[in-house]
Length: 128
Image (tube, rainbow, N blue to C red; front, top):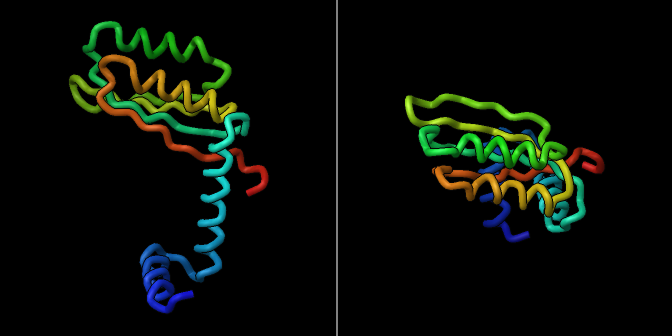
């Protein structure tokens, strides 16, 4: 491996608190495998959808709840946080086939009134 590349890697993993290169490489490999799981629509995965929205938006909360109830088999839990008088944050944990979880996240994020949404992808821990 190129010395400059290795030096940059060592500096980065030290700043992140890794005790050794092998620990950092282990996490990089795991992340690579999780990305691979998400690239196959049929892989069983876990993901979190984080939404920020204005709860005063007409019918928004009803639409969010309806979408979740329509796909209740994928919902593991949700947490609702009041950020201020207008804004709420909701985190929804989804489990299922990667393609279905992605589609559900896109449905939730695209509902009118959602200011920001993001899907964070991880995988069921088998094989990691």
